[in-house]
Length: 560
Ligand code: NOJ
Image (cartoon, rainbow, N blue to C red; front, side, top):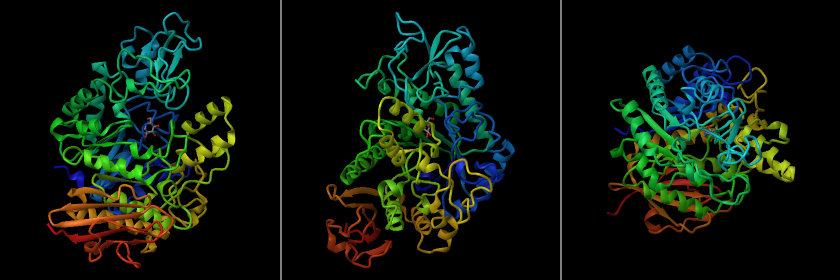
């Protein structure tokens, strides 16, 4: 039971992992050809971002058919082969389940929009214009909600004169989970994938599936449109829907992993979602710690205070200590590269990437490694707007510049926070296209691949890659890593991240220097730790002395 407590997940972003046919876009056969890399790292589970047929308005998170593979990525037969190859290496495969919305090109939506009387009308959220207003008039949208990708969250369908809700792009209409037949169709599709052999699901924004059916206006004064998310984040029936999904899909099946991606989830809610006694999900994927360097929106940058990071991650550790489970991550396909954001991607890149890995992987929870993180891949040197591909960045730029923002200022925030940073091709070797493709990559390869690449990392025993191997191995071999309790130390220290883990008489002290200057870890019981064993890292200057961006794990037998 709960095998995933000692597991590590490796996230693959298929467009950017490996291209087998030279069209410049990664594919399933490419992933299969590179599986040994993931196996060598020691990961237990591979999470595959969406590979279903899609107009690719949001890079595959706009699905037009839930039971097939987009020809860009291959065929169902390629999928089955990949699954068999993953299983043959003793790993599991978790797929992305995107059921808060479909593509507007999904057959369900085509039918739903065909007329107001369509039997599938209620599979989506259709509403007339605001009372007393003409369809299409400014401000006639049924609510003042904003789309996560800029502009209003409603699109008018001129044929029927009603608006449909889309929290993401206008090509991603939200499904209406109030409709029982829709829910059953989703469960049936999920069973179909499980019967095909997949080992679980990463559920895209699954805490958005229950909306307040009254669809009230959002609070706040963010201009004409405000978030409105208080009416759909962890909405009134979300627990009921997930419990039903569990009964209908997961009950009686062993060995699966279910993780709910949940922007805006609180610790208290996360405990409910993941309390095994409630039978909803295995773990959540929460966002608090990746919002600490942002103001009102993700584009509004502000420096990260280490004490805020510790306070946030520490609160999640404490909140789920007795019941429930969390995911651990610094980055994914929606976040900038971890070493550029939280560490140093210049002089101390290798040390910073290792330190970040050490600190994160030694927390309690299930770690997720995003492709390339194990190489210390960095943000990309995007120069011009034309270098970006992501709809979120492009829409934000268009909207802000139209509203009068300084284009250079907007570009600067795209460079820091844009999702394309994480989506540049995987750096396999030093060759011209990084070993990713023989064609023209859909997004430029980071020029630093000549130095930062998997081939070089494998050959260097001191690489970030081998450091990850060691950490993953520890989660498998040292029960305290997966199961020990957690105590945060030095909450106010501005440079040193420090905590202990304990199980029985084994105690670990984990240290990370989040600064470019040498630091001393002034931890309690320092004397005892000065005699401890160095489990991870080096200690040339003393067991509690850290070089810039250095991390370390010490192991001791506890006095208790
Ligand atoms: C979260 C996904 O990770 C992101 O890439 C996507 O744009 C949104 N959900 C909408 O599906």
